[in-house]
Amino acid sequence: QVQLEESGGGLVQAGGSLRLSCVASGRTFSRSVMGWFRQAPGKEREVVSTIRSSGSSTYYVDSVKGRFTISRDNTKNTVSLQMSSLKPEDTAVYLCAASNSENYYGPWVPDYWGQGTQVTVSS
Image (cartoon, rainbow, N blue to C red; front, side, top):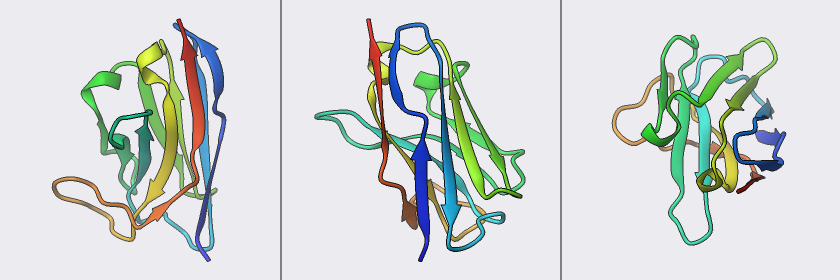
C-alpha cells in the first residue's frame, strides 16, 4: 500500500520560513514525478511545485517563484519544500503528491496523495 506522509507544517509569522517534508512508502518513486499542491479555504487546489525524477527539472507556480525550493532524495524516497519569505496568502493545507510516470504534459495529475499538513502564516 502506497503512503505519502507529510511533516513540517505549522504557524509562522510573515517573512518566516518552513520546511515541508514528505516520505513515501510502499513503492519507490525514484523514477516518478513528485510535488506539492496546496488548498486554501474556499479556493481550488493548486499545484505549487513539481520535480522530475532526476531533480534537474522543476516547476513552480508564479506566486512562489524565488521563495520556495523543491528538492528530492531518491535514496530516501522523500521530497521536500523549503518555503521562505512566507506571506499570509501562502496559508493553506499543503499536500504531497506523486505519480507513476516520469513526465507529464499539461496539468499534472498525480496518482497518489498525502493527507496534507497545515501551514498558517500570520501577518
